[in-house]
Length: 69
Image (cartoon, rainbow, N blue to C red; front, side, top):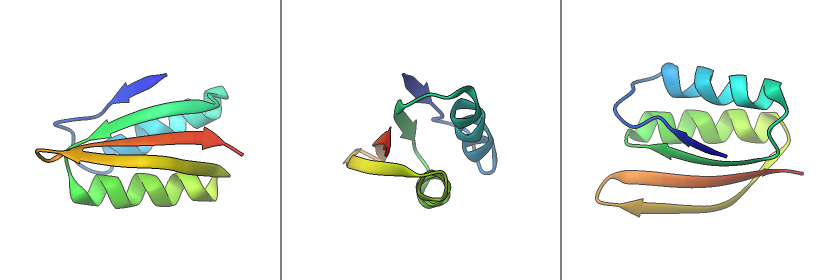
């Protein structure tokens, strides 16, 4: 599933991502445009047992691909 959190400041992207984890989503493509949101959501993902499959930064828009281990 794709979660677009562009334009949102922390902690909103973290809360949205946690909600998807709680729903049981196994694969998530997260899109953010804030460095703090990038780091905080990655930290949350790792603590929930997700792997970071890749990150792509295009013109300040960061796409993070997550999958449940």
